[in-house]
Image (cartoon, rainbow, N blue to C red; front, side):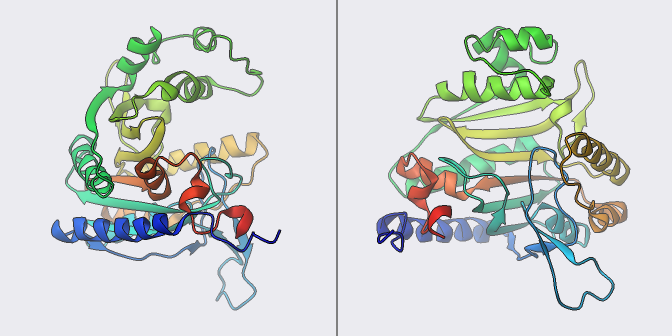
Length: 324
């Protein structure tokens, strides 16, 4: 107990974090992307069934608003409201919170960089994300080659299965000797297990790997491009086995977004999870007119782990969860 007052990360890593923040701000200032600050507490929570939010009860005057407020899991909703108001290209660098996520690569509070480019699609945004990661790696004298692959081609090349058409039984068989109890697991769960247990561990440590065009069922807040099969216009970026970024060609249709929120609520109810109020202000902003855009979120702590070769997220935090 006597040493729990000490920082989790070495002082040189804390200095590197400060240099990274300065690099990020310079990167966007040079490109005319506006830094903004949005609320950490909101009347609406994230409805994504795979993300758990913290909530709290406000004891002061609410002027008729709900007392239950939610700690943000990302600044996505208020940033999109700013886009609809005409603010243009913007970014936020700040703390976000996710319940139940603590371990080697997770901390319940962490730093996220999120930005939006008006008039861009996800393919164009990939290049800018790679430039930013390259600028970060340069701080430690490193570089990494960019490789881009579709979700389908990755599964076909590495596992010999088509993730869009394979049966659930074929997906389970591809896990090999990894034994997972199937109760309550759906198709996307099996695909996620294949990604995390069969594919990610083999990603080259010296390469930025971008995976794009995910199954439509994993669209989250991204557009779905019609086709056979339809695909979600989203991407994830990895450096070695570490996922660093998740980006979308953003959905702008308020009615479709409302339906996705409702589907999320059904899934959460079926799991007996809490169902946060959906963000009606986001939906109103989208109905007013969210401009065509692409957006991406980068996990800054994960990026620092990749830069330093840290095995644990605690090694890049001033004070990890157990010492907070």
